[in-house]
Length: 337
Ligand SMILES: [Zn+2]
Ligand SMILES: [Zn+2]
Image: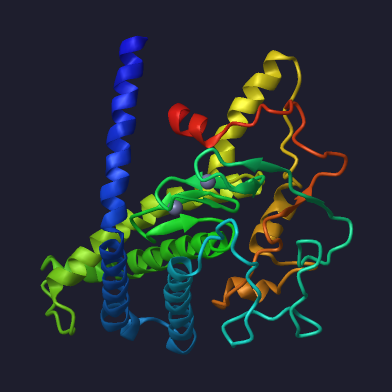
């Protein structure tokens, strides 16, 4: 057991060094991601798009997908996740910001939320003190050891693709970016495989595109890998969201469930409002939120809450099956993951 513990500690140390290295190289990863996404888009519109069926319909759809991909990536890299102590982010007035249907005006932040739906119970968050940066933070916030700050509704730090934390303010754009990355790579794979064989010289059809054959072949292979890998990640995130959990909470709740079971109790996540509502709240659409069109047009959108109040299941003030003081701290998260 002691030996296993040592090996585990060793892996954790290596992981921390990996985080430092990837954290330092973060801006280069972002530049590489922009170059690769641009190359993929150029390959698609140069090689595949000119021969698509029903071009008057298919080309505008492809342009919209590409626009969503670029804009959500831009948002997820530039929108801060929501650090403790920062003033609440007010919606802007530029055309990039989605407008709520009806009044055409953003609802002011009242009681911590912009959600107007009736029948949803919003309760103020409980507070804890961070042992690392000593900030007083609301529930669902966690300390990021790379940013060295506490982040509202912390999900994870992503050093490779976006070079910052995924938290309350950019989590929606992060998931939307992944969804459009999967969709665009899927479209490239499905409609581009005949050109892939062409680029390899299998079909003996002359290559008369601006993009070199080798570049198209590489982008095609990368798209196949990304479509699968990011697809799995997207599925994992959507699964957690549908249960009203962040990535950190999905791990923590397993531990809470185990503890509750020992006491013959059952753990109930008080943020879980049912799959449909959890997804609507996350994407901030539906009654009281924004139009469903915001899933297809790349608008900037604020979350339904400022991170200091949360929608909760009726009748629950906290998670059921948990005792006061049983919440896992960031230290335990780091050691036990
Ligand atoms: Zn902290
Ligand atoms: Zn971070």
